[in-house]
Image (cartoon, rainbow, N blue to C red; front, side, top):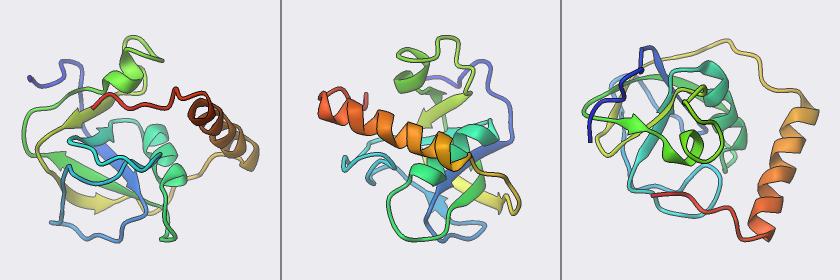
Length: 136
């Protein structure tokens, strides 16, 4: 694994977890989108991708977007770059090494209720068709 060649900070991670600067995000937890323990931690250098991450995350906590710093090598997220968006326009990445939280984005604008529902409907459709796998 090498560093993603076009990656530029800042990096973001969307979630519902209540964390603080200095905390580490590590692999080994369920995906935001389905019950599947992942051996990678995912992040992006676009705020929009992080917004989707926290809006779609399971749980009851407040939607949060953290500014993170990778602590090791990372690569393009093949779930998006190879499958849906060739060339990685979402600037989505994954790492087996922890991400250190260095801050939180306090103000951001979420997707419209219609966009959010359309995304949830699309994810439900993929699950019903058995096509909601995550390349881990």
